[in-house]
Figure 1 (cartoon, rainbow, N blue to C red):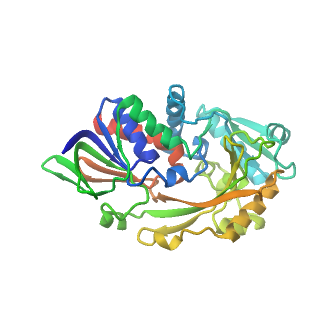
Figure 2: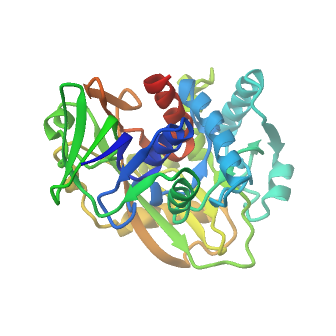
Figure 3: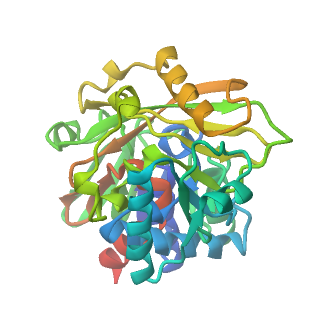
Length: 381
């Protein structure tokens, strides 16, 4: 049996950053990933790290995550680009919320700038003038390539920290007996460690299904699209719009939020949990989305693997209202899934040395690096 200081179950962004921070403390680390390579929540998203959308401790974890991303990027290319984030307000309510969040974030010494309508159109010429009321811009936030980032981080962990990584390795049992923890894989291999950390996303049927069944976790299904490469279009950074202002947690801190109402033209979009975001990839293609449908543990298969054409058309219709470029030139569509929890994260101690961390929701790319650092410090320092 091979022994390690830490075993991480799950090679996505949460698992990888727990491995990173443990390895930085000099711990020997093994990551066990059930698939050929990570294919779930970490790679099926926009690739936006936007602390500006989070509140409370998650805002703090997000700020710390930006520092961690930039530190790694300075040493090893993991696709991080500091292109900033903008929220575009389309009406008086959204513009008021943007102004109020600007004040909140100024008081927290978080770099942000209010942009007038003219400044928004100058900085983002693809926006339609009739949509834009104004914006709030965060110059230090970053974009990453979701189809590259995790693979680059796993390479970095193996090359720089000698982290052991095993793909195609499903863990089917995990136990602590007499202070000794071990995992057993589907191929009957055994590995032991001082600590076992389970970051298995929305996979609830391989380990401790009875715990997940009572956890309150749900799974969100998101529909997303990506255009063909558009070499003559420039959308720098993370572009979020009025529906994002009405949806993201940070804006709920604003005094006017509780009295805001939903305009009639948003009602069908809100029914499907739609808010419109844009992020241009390195090849010039543009990711557009997204929508949200939900199911509890045990019924997640009912969400289906398909994408609904009706929902995609709703998103594209709203996107056409916002930008000039031809949003209908779609190269691919897909459904992403992630686990989330009413308490913002699901943390559960199976035993003193076996820990579950999952259900971080849509803030995983933004906050996992900082959150994992705090966990590792709590567990080992």
